[in-house]
Length: 265
Ligand SMILES: C[S@@+](CC[C@H](N)C(=O)[O-])C[C@H]1O[C@@H](n2cnc3c(N)ncnc32)[C@H](O)[C@@H]1O
Image (cartoon, rainbow, N blue to C red):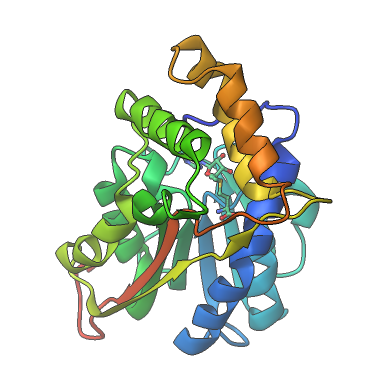
């Protein structure tokens, strides 16, 4: 496994819940648009704390099935039961069952995986003919959009980019998703992009944004990519009651296995 974020980081559960809170409404809306409903069989890869698993379970009901897969299932185990089952697996090396699901979903996972394309292919094989593959990843193209201009913000975001260069993390993953879905043989491909409006909050700051930088801070400092003064200025910005930014762009893309595809037979 090549995951750049430290699962043992002291606030990882809070960080993931925060991220999920930002993106769950968009994910749920697309699930509804794709028709996720009672009785569907779904898989969520890299399920994290399971917020999407719960969204899916609410829709598929007791006669449906939601398989929550993650290399680290600590936060998922308590959700097991009813339609939800939990599988500890590295999705880059352990195959998914073929022709099984109506929908296979992964959010904020492929951007971490050098084998992203192979994982999309395995998701395409795991859905039944006519089933949907739905993937969501960030693209850092909008991450420098901040007003008023801030040198500290710019230095921190550029430092993150530099850090990513030496790792498997792909900050351009989002834009690559639609073509990757097409190359995996899927059709009816579409996508929605969302840049979040992040507005500084004197009381709370921007926990999702700030905790990501906190997670990376020891490595950013260790490699000399930023100084502590930049990090402090970055945090002050999100409490100043004035600054706004867009954060990275979330690209949500989906495609379906052709209904007459017999590749599994
Ligand atoms: C940033 S979190 C995203 C969690 C969730 N999908 C969400 O959007 O809220 C990425 C998750 O992928 C899992 N992960 C990373 N590499 C993995 C791999 N090779 N196989 C399975 N899970 C992996 C991590 O353990 C983590 O829970």
